[in-house]
Length: 545
Image (tube, rainbow, N blue to C red; front, side, top):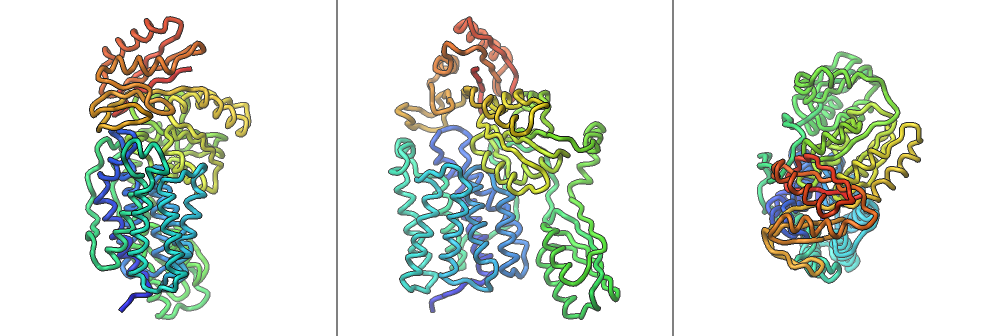
C-alpha cells in the first residue's frame, strides 16, 4: 500500500538517516573541492551543520511536529559552518517553517516546504550562482511541484523521482560552472544535498546507517578554540510559576511529557498555586513559553553548564574584563595561528575565534563570541569568504546589539580593516573606511596540492606548491621559493610599498628570514615586514599594499 503522509516520528527517523548518510560521504565530498588544497571542507562543514541539529533530534523521545521542526531549524542554524552549511541550514529553516503546524504532511505540504526552503536559501546568498547547491535545491523543488501537480500521492514515488532528478542536475553542474568542468568535478555542496536526500529516503524505507551519538575524531587540520565538556543538554533551567488556578493532574502530566521530550533530569513540584520546575534543556525559551501558558513567572534561572568549569580556568584579568562596563564598540576576528591572533589582539580585538581555512567557525561560535563582548556595536571580521555567511547569520540572530560584518576574505584584509578604525568616527563612517581599507589589500597564500587538476589553464600536480591570489592560482611548481617569487611578481606593481609576510607553523624562522631577504633583494623599493603567523596548512600568507 502506498504511503501518502509522514508524521513527526517518521520525519525524525528520516532526518537522522540523512545526517548519517552525509557523514559517511564527508571525505568524498571534501575531495570535490575545485581548488586541490588540503583544507577542502564542504563535506565537513555540511556534516557538522546537520549533526548539530541531529543531536537535538535524536534526544527527542516522542517528537511532535512543532518540537521536531524547532530542533531541526535552530540546531542547524546555530551549527552552520561555511557557505554550504549556511545554505543547508536555510533549506531546513524554510522547509520547517511550512510544516511545523502540521500533524502529518503529504506531498502538497512537502511541495510548499521545498518552495520555501529554496526561497530562504537564495535570500541568504548575496550573489547566488547557478551550478551550485542552490541549483540542485531548486531542481528538487521543481520536481516536487511537478509530482504534486500530476496528482501523485505516493511519497515513495516522489522520492524516487526527486532523487533521480537531483542526480541529473548535479551531473550537469560542470556545464553551468566552467571552473567545475575544468577541475573535472561536480559541485560539492550539491553532492552533499543529494546524499542528504538519499539518506532521507533510506530512513523512509526503514534502512540507512544507524544514528549514534559517538563523537568522531576531529577532521585533520581542525583548529579548536578550547576543549569543552560536552553536555547532551547545555542549559540547566529552573523556574517558579504562579498558577492562574489549581493545576489539574492531566495538565501536570502534559507538562511533564513536554519537558521530558525537550530535556532530561526533569523535576516538577506542584504546591497548590506554585509550580517549581528544574530541567536540563537545549532550549530554555521553549520551556518558558510552555510555562507561561499556565500562569505567571515568579523566578527564572538559566545556567550554561559549561560556565562553572570555564570560570575556574580563567585568569584574573579575564574575569576582570567580564565585569567591565558596557562600551560603545567591540571587535571579533577569525584567525588561525598564535601569531595571527596576537596581531589582532594587539590591535584591540576583544575576541579572536580560532579557525579560518582549516576549520570554519559555526554560527554558534559567532553568537558565543558576541555574547562575551559587552558593547552596543560589534564589528566582525570573518577573514575568509567561506565564513561570511555564518557571520551574517549570527548578525541576523542577534537582537540586543548592533552587529556589523565587514566582509573580509583574508586575514591581511581583516588586519587592515582593524587598523582603519577611528574611535571618533560614527559606526557608519568606520564601516565605510574599513571596507575601503580591506579592498586595497592584495593577498597571496602558499600551500600545496593534494591532487592533480587544472585551474584557469594551469596544470597542477599532486604535492606541487601553489601560490593562490585573491582571484585564483598565480604560480605553482616544485620549488617553494620559485613559487613564492612567481606569486609576488604578479601581486607587486609600481604602486606597491609594503609586503607583509606571515610564516606558518611548518616554516622555520631561518627559512622565513631567508625568504624575506630574497624579497627585499628582488623588490628593493618595497618595505618588507616579516611576522610569525603560526597558521597551519599555509606556509606563507602575504599581503601587498
